[in-house]
Amino acid sequence: MWTSKEELDIEKARDSASKLVVLGSALKAGLFEALAEEKDIVTLARELHGDERALFIMLEALSVMGYINKRQGRYVISDRARPMFLERGEEYVGGFLPHFMDIMKAWLMLPYIIKGEKPEREKRDVAAFMHAMASKTDENVEETVKTCLKRKPDAKNLLDMGGGPGTYSRAFVNKGIKSVVLYDMPDVIEYVSREFRLKEIKNLALKSGDFTKNDFEKEFKGESFDIVFMANICHIYSEEENRILIKRAGKLVKPGGMVAIEDFVRGRSPMAEMFAVNMLANTEGGNTYTEAQYREWLEEGGFSKIEVTDLNEKERQLITAFK
Image (tube, rainbow, N blue to C red; front, side, top):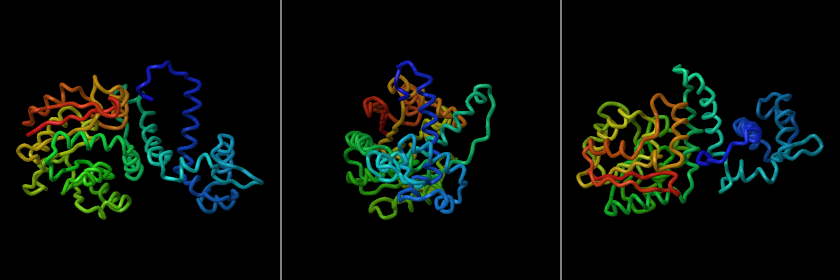
């Protein structure tokens, strides 16, 4: 865990990292899904349009690790691996592991970023990113939503800015919010509406757009909200971008309404410093910020009655403020 202060065992970490790359590569290549039933390498290569040498080497390694069973030249996913890579239960890691692989690719550019270089970033994998965001536990989402509605119990409508897979939007609807709008980039909305069946949820509307653009709030044509909710947004942007974003978001909050921001707050979350490294690797200006910075931005945006609440045993924080 990023929060751990225990001394790192370099050799064990190296071995674990190697194994994680093997598992992530197998998952992204479709190996585990293809081996839900027993197959030989020739059949597998034909189905995956794969290379037989590469498949043999990967399957043998996965077999030694215990994630694939081998019998008379045929392979099948092991009972140990099924809940991790096929069954979408509590043990499932297929939601975040492909996104983790993308993140690590960016982290390997850190030596160059430290020297001031700006490596070209690959186009984001929307599917991997959305499934990673959707892997957040129900308990954590429930805690955030309950805390929001405790602060604003009379809320009737809500804007979920950058709501991605709709994890929070769905939870707010289930808690009785009569009208929820999920707002995100067009490619995200196109994907999540289909993959996560968001169009089928009563009281949830999907709206595509870009909240980093000037006057994006005009897209709502005068509509305003009891709550404007932003989870995992502010850490993507610089101080100045957040200052502007909060002012724009404030234009969409009704008088007496509330903005709610979930993120890692420096000085309160033990994850904040290491998560900032992730933003260094993966964004142009992202970072994690202190409570004082959030208070300054919110006050400049016309908000008051600012509160910061620790969530998930202080891992994350919820910042709420009223217009």
